[in-house]
Each structure stands twice: as C-alpha cells, then as structure tokens.
Amino acid sequence: MAMPEGEMLPAADRRARNIDSLRRYFRLLEEGEIDEWSTLWAAEGTQLVPYATGALPREINGRDDIRVLYRNIAAGFERLRYLVLEFQPMADPDMMLARWRPLCHLVGGGEYTNESFGIFRFDAQGKIVHFVEYFNPAGFVENYDSFSEE
Image (cartoon, rainbow, N blue to C red; front, side):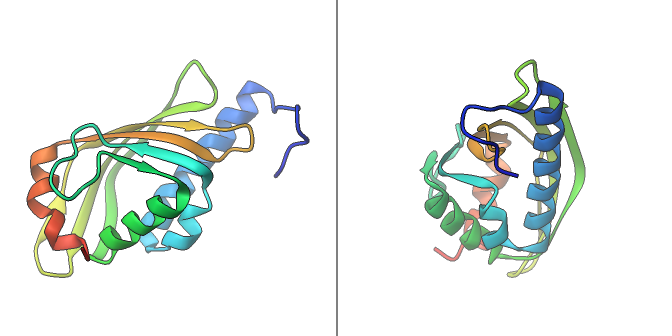
C-alpha cells in the first residue's frame, strides 16, 4: 500500500506492517522465492555483514546485487527452515530486531545451522532500506562454498 508523499502511517501501524514484512521475508526465503523476496527491498537497499570473511561480501549495495547474492546462496539449499524466528520492535517504529536460527539441508549433503540476529530499517513505504546481519562467522564461512554457486 503506497502512501501519498509526505504522509506517514501512525507508529503502531508502521510497526505492524514491518513485522508482517519480516514474516514474509523469512517465509519467502524458506520457499526459495528470491525474486519475490527481493521486492521487499528498496531499490537502494543495503546489507552490512560485519563478520563476513572469505567470498561473502561485507557490504552489499542495491536490491539487484542483494538478489544475486541470495540467489547464489539459496541455490545451495535443498531445504531451508527456521527453527527459531523472533521479532522485537524498537523505539523507532521503522526499525526492527530479528533473531533466527536457520536449518539448511545442503545440495552437496550435510546441514548448516547458525544463530543469527539482525537489525532492519524500513522506509516510509515499508521497504527494507538497511539490514545489518550478525551470525557466528565460523559456521557460515566453513560452509559458504557448499551453498554458493560462485
């Protein structure tokens, strides 16, 4: 739902909308629907991964580059589901803290799991404009080649 320029939903409505967006975000990742998932991002959206090492980029700029990265990662998953998925609103209604624990069955065999949390910032239209993701880097880096096409 697009708001007329200059108008903004009340804070409680923005929080509810953003929680719904995050539920959809994780559901679409589980379903491997990366193209539809990418529509949740603003065109200029950014993702920061402070603990990234190796082939995983520390910063990804723009919805198109984010979509490519996640397509590559998702190509290595036979199945993804979330064992834990929690959302915590922050004082700013356009910011949300999420915590999740993925369980990924890898195409090459084996499983990947990790503990993750992130801070999401949304624009006035409810699109993700910035996401900072934290996870245990050892587990991710050890498995990155197993679930990336690159």
